[in-house]
Structures are given as C-alpha cells and as structure tokens.
Length: 78
Length: 536
Image 1 (cartoon, each protein chain N blue to C red):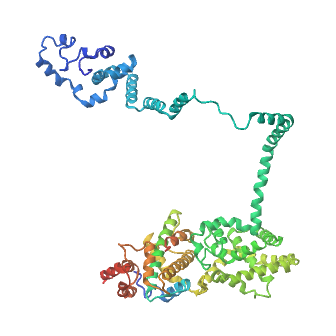
Image 2: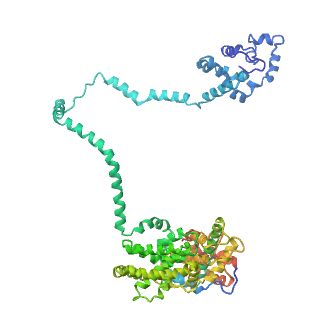
C-alpha cells in the first residue's frame, strides 16, 4: 500500500513524540506509532465521510472533519 | 355429567339432578331412570358399552378442562355457588351444555366466570386473602390482649399535676391570647405576598455576585461549553487547535457553515476576544465594537467578510496603539504564529498592551478611533469585496509556512508534512467512502489539527506507560499496550497483520527486527512473536 518512495518522514514522527512526551523514543517505535496514526487517520476519514454523506455533502468538508475529530481522537485514547 | 351428544337438557334440572340426566349414557350409572327408557329396548350392557366411544366429551380431558365453566356459570347464576363446589362431579360434564350459551352475551358470561374461577379477577383471591389477613393481624391479637388486660388496668396519671397546665392556660388566656391571634394572621396575609417578591430578589444577587467575583463576564457563558468539551481537548496542550480557548469552540459552533472562518477566529479571534474580556468594563471597547459595527453596516456587511474583518481591524488598532513596541508590519504575522507558537508571553504582552492602551490612549481614544476608522474604511473597502479571498490567501500562506509549535513541555516540534497527510487521508477516504473524494484545503487543515491532537495524546499516553514501567524510553511494548487499549489490536489482529496492511515493506522490515528482543522481555509479546513467525 502506498508504495511511494517514502511513506512518511520517520524523524519527524520521532520528534513529535519526543517533544510531547519528553522521553526518548527507542529505535523502531516510530514505525508502530505511525501505524497507529494510520489507523487513526483511517478512522477519522471514515467517520468524516460518513458525516459528510449524512450532511449531503459531496466530498469531505472541513466541517465534517471537525465534527468527527473529537470523537475519533477520544477513540484513540490509551 | 353433561357429556352427552343428544340432548340439551335444562341446566337447572341438570344441576339439581346430575345423576338423573336423560342423556346420561356413561357406564357409571347405566341404570338411571331416564337413561333406561331411552336405551330401554336394547339396554344391554354391550349396547351401552358400544355407545361409549360415540361420547367423546367426557373422554377427552381437554374438553373437560375447557368446559369446566358452563355448568358452573348456570349454577352460579341460578343457584348458590356452594352447590357447585359441593358437587364437583357435575362440573365434569359441562361441555355438553355449551351450546346453550351460544349468544355472545352468554359466551361472555361464561368466559368471565371461568376467569373468575381461575382467580384472575381481583375479587376472589384478594377477598380470601384479606379475610385471612384480617383474621391474623397483630392488631387483632393486640385487641384480644387489651380485652384481657382492660379490667385490670387503671388509667395512668400524668406525673406533673394537671392544675399547672390549667393555671398556665388561664394566665395566657388573660393577656396573650389576643396578641397571638393577632400575630398569626398578619404573617399569613403578608407572607405570601412578600414571599414572591423576596424570593425573586433573593435569587438574583447570588448570580450577579458570582459573576462579579470572576470579574470576567464572558466566562460565565463559556464555562459550560468548556466542561462539555474538556474530555477531548482538555488534556491537550495549547498547541492544539481546540484548546486555545473556548472562543474557538464558540466560533466553531457558530460558524458551522464557514469552514474557513475557523482559522481566522484562531488567528484573530483569540486576542480580540481577550481584549474584549479585559476591557469589558470600559466603554472604550464598546466604542471599538460599535464603531466597527457601524462601519460594517455602512459597508453592507458581507457576513463572511464581516467576521473576518473585525478582528483584522482590531489588529490594525493595536498597531496604532503600540507602535513603539512592535513594528506594525509584523503584527499579523506574529498573531498568526501566535496560533502556532501560543506562547503565554505573547498573550500577556498583548493584554498588557491593551491595558496600556486603555490608560494612555483613553483621552485620545476618539481621535485615534476616528483616524483608525478611516483606515478601517479603506481596508474594508478593499476587503469587503475580496475579503474572503484575502483571508483565504493569508491562511494558505500560513499553512504553507513551516509552523513551529511548542509542546506543553516547551519543546518545539514539527508537524507531519501536509503532503504526506493529504496522501494518506485521500487514500483512506477513498477506501472508506466514494472513490473519487478530494480533500479540500480546509479539510486538510482540519485533518492536520486532528493529527496534532492525536500525536499529542498518543505521546502523552506513551510517556505515561514508559513512566509506569520505570523507563526513560518509550519502547515497542508501550506502543503495543497503547494499541491494545485503543482496541486496535486483539487476538485476531496483531500489530504485524496491521502493519502488513498499512505499511510498506521497508517499514515492515524494521518491525521485523523487533521480536527477538521482545520475546525475552515479556509475555505480552508472545503473540507478537507468533505473528512474526507467520509473517516470515
């Protein structure tokens, strides 16, 4: 899937997590975190598209994304 | 026995003489006087025996059970219920008399009586039970006891002598009775009238005093909203878009239709509303808003542009007022980065500036505002027409610009590149929804914000897990735990199956390096090891 040359900048993910948690991040953790992020994004987009369809929009608008953001984020609360 | 096919005998006669019924052909009393003449010519025992199978009704227990009522009903109507109870044998044959109750009323009566016998009506069992209870109540035993004890007991004499009460009564009656009577009606008359008024007046002061204690009028409106939303954004740091202030939520709720406005409210609305809060007492702020509103009205106020412009104009105002501190060109940029950087210093600085503005410029305020209104007019004249475009362009520029956010620990962090997120989001949107979904800029911004939230929350959780394990480093096991708690992983879906679905091969290879170290570490990773075996 998404077999582009580079799926995501690994260093960036690492930096983000590091900054938020103030902990070091071991070597390959960022892959797993990105995997989690991919799951989150999938959930988010699914919810957003459902919401958009219910609202009768074509495509996905910012409004529908915002509406489902909170739900999706809280779904991914550890 | 009413079980008999040929006759519809008189029920009364049947009830009276159940054993002498004419149609009775049961073997029990073949020698009954009525049966004898009917079956007389061939009244051999063999004959009667042959007749038995032609009499289905007594033989079928179901019939018997269902038809238990009718004879009883007739009897109950015409006779006392006692007879029915006494002669159960007559009840059995009631089925034969069914046809007598062919009218609907009769059937209803039968049904009712059956139900009553079955104990469905409240009358029967309750009556019985109530009688039983009456017989058994402790009150009865007490009464019996009292009857037993009554002759022996003597009336009790109160220890304080009666005359004391009498004298008290006398003394009171002499002087104070009239006073008491006079006092009582007065409150009765006055209280209901006064109570309503006083209640209203009593209720209000606490409300207003509570507001005054807070000294922030707007907050009272916002509090409930914050409480409702605190679950999600509450724990996120100020870098994320929901947590800057409830003003954002307010804007989001109000301007639901205008996706692009949210950012503007983030950029401009924050400081603007802060200022509003600070200067709520002063008439100055009112001046600002009123003049601006007038200006808006004069410009026939496009709704979108209006909401965007007002904060803008305010930004211009701030330029004019504290030129000495901040070069005017930077103000919009700073404010935009404000949304990203969100340093509290910045906010306080602005607040201070506003305070200064109040104190210093107060006298000149009108001049300043006049001058500024001209500015505003000019800027509005341009911007009302293309207002939306201008703000949109600004926003896109801001989005393009590399934003630097600071986590709650004060560490700056980048965000994921928008291109990557867009690619992923488009992919997932297409897999989940219609195949040719396009994601607009605004939607992408929202997704980016959501991503920031997500990373913040996830990082917090991971840090907490690592902390709990006494580590300084976030390890794979933490993420596995996290994903398990997020219900992304279970026995059926291992992280590796997920990774195979979601990640390209080179990243999978990185994941494959993990297991050997993990298997040593804990049982939680056993399934991971298995998964790895499968993958290999």
